[in-house]
Length: 183
Ligand code: IMP
Image (cartoon, rainbow, N blue to C red):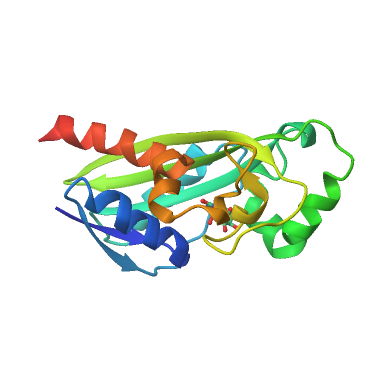
């Protein structure tokens, strides 16, 4: 079974390759720009983007919309995560969280998968904290400022370990459960 991973984010491509290969699913990276609607729900963004991609003739693919939600910031940056990273960056998020005692945050990953003519949408989650400084060199995006165990950031743990506990790893397992029901 082969799925196209449609994204411009190479970090995601690497994580999907590693996570899905262990379930016997091959991946191929495809860069197709598509518009994302603005919505407060990752699942709605993904659903609309899937319709757009299918209408342009694509099939057997996965797309991923993710975000980090900080409790003390009422869920910000959440669905605006890509914009927040592009504009204020990790340093800006840390600044917003300066002297904030409640560090709780969660990462969410919504996967939209079109497979054998069927659409599957799953939402994975990982709870943790926003650290007080950037640490680590692995991964991408918010990895240096997020920790699932309050000790090591996502940028300090190997990719396989991140897939074992991350929002994306969680979403992949939910997706594979759904795919298994089909075969
Ligand atoms: P996107 O819109 O799904 O690409 O992701 C929103 C933002 O969150 C982007 O800036 C990504 O780099 C970032 N992001 C998504 N997944 C992760 C992750 O697993 N670790 C760190 N940052 C992530």
